[in-house]
Image: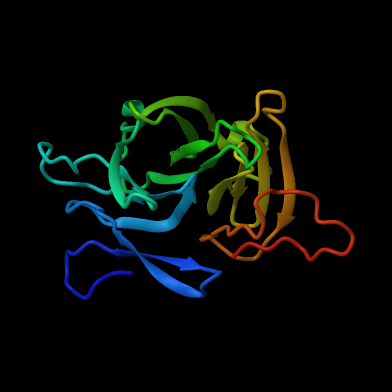
Length: 223
């Protein structure tokens, strides 16, 4: 919840299903330098992750010159600022550069973490956070969309997300694909469906995993 006072930190509210009330979860310090992008905000292992914007910023001496991730521990009401991987900084201030963060690893994986996805010049680059204390990252993927097996001559990416921890879901202006990032199945792109949502596509998962619809299930939808 954003306060009425300009520049104040947002207030976290936690809903208790048992008591059917909203409880005060403390204030999330988001920094005074950049706006926060809420489209990919998520909670992983009791921590809420928020990504700052990555547009041009004046003042290289500022701690907010480079984009960053806000990590808010809900139980302890503690905010930490995570640096992005240094090798992700190339052209990161370009207006055509798109950044997002997602969950990495599914509920049955003890190595659950977060990943950073960068799309620039139609090249996907993905880093996974490997050390929570040192905030170190490991790059696990980099590839141009033309080399991923997507069809058609116009391969402008309209939207993307990461599901199941290791599936990159990609929407062009007319089609949705999934690309498996796991080592045993990497390089296998699969066409999921067509869509009519145009140039701006946002994915919202209705389940913790991506799986076959089944005969009685409704069709997949992107909006």
